[in-house]
Image (cartoon, rainbow, N blue to C red; front, top):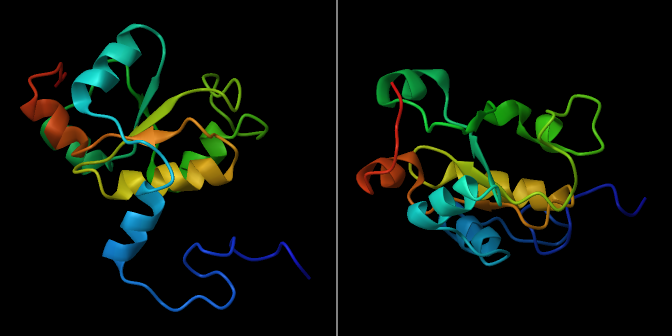
Length: 143
């Protein structure tokens, strides 16, 4: 039956050869424009982007939180941000929401952003360098 598997050209698509994580990251990042910390900060302050922190609890406890960011564990991300889903967060109002996914260093967030694109969230992106780049840029962090 067609339509049951991954989209051709993505990892795991019919007829695709196995790829390493570096190639997979390059492929998914080629599908959208990533965002730098200062640009993400400005967009969030202007109400033009929803920052979503997918880091696990131990990292948030160790390093702090980005004020105003929505915390969604990675394993719940798609369910919480799907505007059509029954388990969505109130902020998941439409497929046009500009979501900026933030992980610790900007790797897992790339895969997560690509997954959100698969749900129709075409403006989803991720933070270059992740939380560590945010912190290094001197942007706000709460304990």
